[in-house]
Image 1: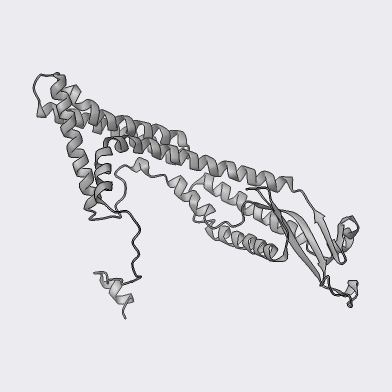
Image 2: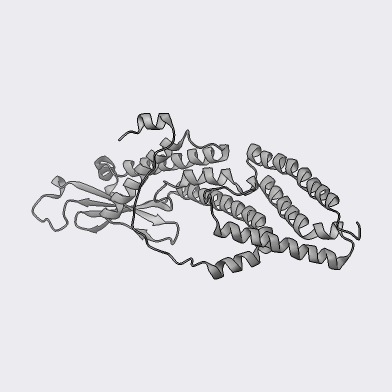
Length: 317
């Protein structure tokens, strides 16, 4: 420490902090990707948070013995940092640029989003089957000659409500088939082992759902088990089933989903905390001068040609 501002020591201090921290950060983050364990991302996020405060808040006091001068240096630093941040808010040369720290990137979370993005009716489980022999109001056609229609009733894991009618049944069957198709097409695109495993489990789950629906929707099954069904009105029967295995699968999927979301959010919040505190003045000024209300504009698409010979060769009007 010294009573005078020393630019050389200033630069050496910053260099030592940054260059000693970066390799450690890279090693820890690479282990996060290698072992797919969020413990490493937590460690990297906490280190980034600590270093952000060390460089900004403790740096002036580490090179300046005089507390007043050190505090003045801190104020000046914060002023320039917030001024620069405000300019970045206002002057967006490249709005598609990525965060400055790779720690804020969570590829496991992004990879997992691709798994669940195109899964439909994932909260629902088959619970009842409504068997209808033709139109209940048809009193002319004999029962044995009427066409069997089977509707699948589901229980919703969100609110535990059940619903059984033909329209929602057809929608549910369509969702199951579409989810299977989407998951099969994604199988080779998922990168991380933990997400590949959950994709296979989801796919197996929907295969099992489709299987039990098909088994309970045949005329042979209806004829063999009709006596055990509840006769609700002429030509209509109801069967109830409890699929503990399917319910257990969805509970496990929910646990994995919430775990990934929790770890992703926590790590992001840790990394964002230091800049959020340091940049409070810039954020306040930005909100004063910027109108964030939604502005509607007419749709207009125009793709300019790329300055590339291959592009022009295959993209001519």
